[in-house]
Image (tube, rainbow, N blue to C red):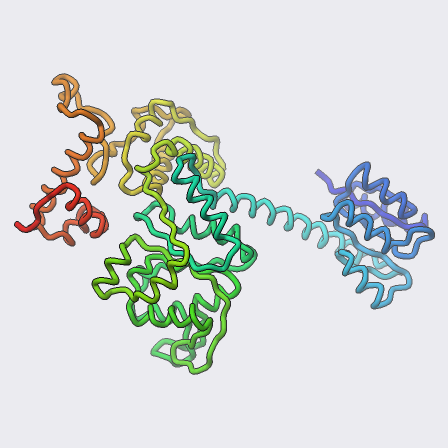
Length: 460
């Protein structure tokens, strides 16, 4: 669809000349000979761009510009003047003009300015759409009471500058909560910088966080800005902060207190304004008692504590999350979406998802990729049982013939399976909790809690 341009000038020859050139370039052209006519024309058919003469009888171009911007703030306007001065150009720019062209008009310059203005308008629209998509990406999906409470907490803390500590199991969406806080904060137009403290070797973590000076160590051939530098004015998300060394913890504490730091190998103090959101799947109170986490840093971070619930605590949200992931996947892939039958959704809803929302998203995408048809049935759902905390999705034929296991509830069946599974894996690994946790891909602290809750004696 061709763009519409409104040409406003009291000189008929200029209107005709500009209209002819622009129409030759494929634009639709409207014309007006006065400021009043420009306002009326814009009300009837909002143009994509306005070429507006400054010196016109009656309402001049600057007043017309001011009124157009009051009515249509996003309207793009290029000013034209035969007696341009710096003061006039500055005033037009302050009123919102995109460009300022002097007479006699250079047709090449006019066309270049028109192309640039329309391109900028398209970029602005694209940027607004991307922001809308990003807002959807960072939306906390769910109708469960625990999610309503979490969203309320986010909206309360987001406008402040308070530090936030987000806890929860792996895959629950701790970074999503952090991004949501940033998105609704007054820093939303500034950077959100994330760093996984557990994924970076100890000898490199300080360089990543604080940057380094040239020659600070072998391979430091130039100065490098760290995450604190990059997040200046915005938000820094420290994921898995429980895995940060005590030495680095001390430096992070200093930054929170003094808002300044030194780069590795440097002596100059760098001042930053950064809001810190930290996250961990560990019990930091236990880490403090074991001497692995600084108590003073904990209290600095734990100004507003958040807990992101596990997916098993909000089974009613699973259909909504599946729908969200389906839409997200096909928006990214550009294909026609598939539909889950109610029975297939029922199977997913009854599973306990030890990998939480991350596991659900991966499974949904696997199903969408591997299922050839447009409708997803129970036959398309992969086998999900066999992981710690899982709920069997269907009885085997033998169980169906024999009447199944004699238990009172589904929860009892799951807990019985989970307890026997954990005991079996502990036996296979000589009752070594750390090794068992690694084998079954569960955090050691989570495994320890399950062992305690099931009354499993590991002193063997």
